[in-house]
Length: 106
Length: 228
Image 1 (cartoon, rainbow over the protein chains, first blue to last red):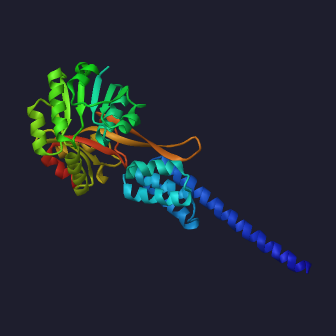
Image 2 (tube, rainbow over the protein chains, first blue to last red):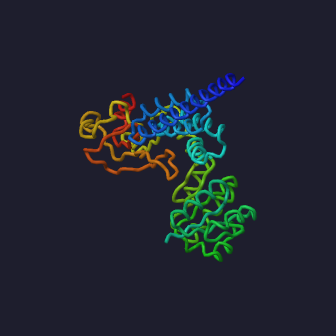
């Protein structure tokens, strides 16, 4: 009985560690993407944010960042898709709605 | 301070009035529709519900002392012609009138409008131009041979200085300004960018990904730039 409980505990611990690792990885990728964006390395930034999206596809922040980079590269269609996705996941995202309004028109 | 009168507060008139205020002008707004007057009254210097085709009314409002008049009662052709005529007689120097059709425009010009605008027609042309050539953002024709236009920086320009690109010698046009996007992080750490316009950029200025170049040159050279 005690042994079984111990085994379950270890399983849960492993799961939590995995989730934590995933979260940390996404955070690092976002930071890296932002770093490239700030240095006007837009293609590198896009590749980092895309990597992050593969791990966490429901993270509004990543889509917003992709939108900003696409807009900086003068790709308004791609940017507006990303802002729309951001607002689907987080309807209160003020910057995303500001940029989307600017592209699509009020 | 420039004093302007806007007659007719539809979408066009209202947005002209609002922008003039933003640019620091004094604006008198006139319309027959009470609702429209009410809506704009908080924005403009003075908003009046009145019949602008009545000379006495215009005089009592001091319209004769205005620098510029914008007549945007386009939907009512008769009123727009009458108001233009009255303002001309009252001595307003600059009269800008909105026309619905070419013939309407001809009449307005004949009776003294200093400038006739066709917002719908012009916007339609601009929209079609931007859809037909998406890389060209704004196109100002200076003459049939010369234009000013905005283009996305071609890939082959990115990462190079204007000296290296040598656009005047190689492409026969001048870059008169560069619109740049400057990435930054907000106070809460979110990505955003500011837009900056560099007028007459120096030869050491480097063209970056996402820059918009404002180019002046012969129209035929523009086609070459488009295909880079």
